[in-house]
Image 1 (spheres, rainbow, N blue to C red):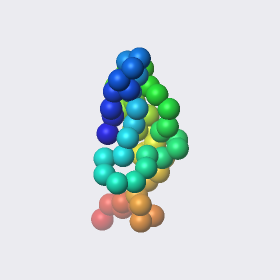
Image 2: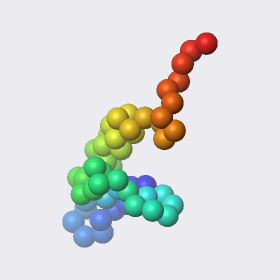
Image 3: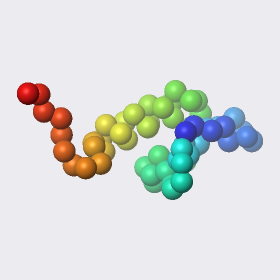
Length: 57
């Protein structure tokens, strides 16, 4: 979840539910689209949680 900083107009990435956001996404972002791009890039490098890859049949 992307939330406004509330002080200087920056945005922070927060976990949707319980837990913490990854360290790679820590820090502040100047715009929401920039934060969304960082999340998309992180998810692309992470892959699936169970370690499997999608194969076509």
